[in-house]
Amino acid sequence: MTTESLPRTPAELGLPELPIEAHPADPAEHHVRAKLDREIRALLAYEPGTRSGADPEDLHQMRVALRRMRSVLKLSGELVGDGAEPVRAELGWLGQSLGEVRDYDVLIGHLREVIADFEVRDQAAGRRLVSKFVTERAAAKRRLTRALSSARYSTLLREVSLLTRAKGVPHEAPHNLVTGLAKPHRKLAKAVDALPADPPDDDLHALRIHGKKLRYAAELAQTSAKKKQAARIKVLLKATKDFQTVLGDHQDAVMAAERMRSVLESVDGPMGFVAGRIAERELGRRAEARAVWRRSWAAVDEAARALHA
Image 1 (cartoon, rainbow, N blue to C red):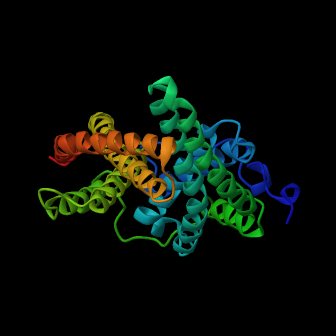
Image 2: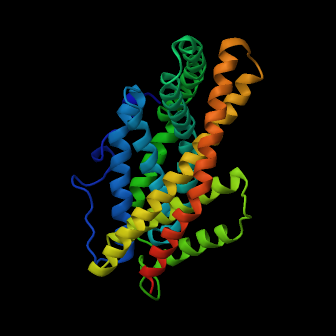
Image 3: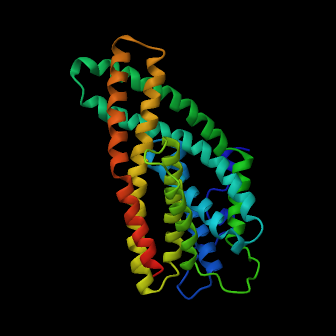
């Protein structure tokens, strides 16, 4: 399938001209469909920039839209029918391709900032180090472009658009998106409680994913919340965003340090020296995040508990 035959606009996917609107009094399933409608439109809007690669932010925002859809389908997919889980799995496939390139964008951007602060005599070796990852990023970008030009991607877009119009299975009791926030909060709290005093890096990364699910669920619930609840959800959203930032900085530092270790295994001389300096800096950034993440979690926990008090 060529890119010319891919659906590129909401209209080509059968979506209405204007985004679906949801009001607090609407049933939960309508809010879920409206959220999917907004995010599939965002994904389409950022796709051209993702393909061109002119601004890494386009790819980042396309990935965010995809993650929001996956989170909504995980938490409330039953409200839009049986097709939700297969679509969520396919979104995961696309997310892997987007994530690979995004990881390189974050790494390259950060390395350029770090190297800019080094002495002039280390600049050339630093640029050679960055060029190594730029080359790897180009290969990942080609894989992403193939994915975005595939029939599989076209089918995925159409399946998401169908979910925005699907009718879910009727429930005996109305589904409340605000009270439903208790579930992702409990999962996050349970994951925090299970951690040792000095958690492994992978466990903190998993914790960030739990936090992201709570944040996306809160974004969805906010559209159906009453005034007092909406104000409390706003506090929760800020807390979860801060929590993600702290643990995101931790994960970025861990990954950057690992990349530098891999470089040190294959090079020496000036480039190896620069890689070693960067690795040391990243381990320091990792330590800084570890010193504050529990404080950030406490703010999330307090905000979530206040919502259900």
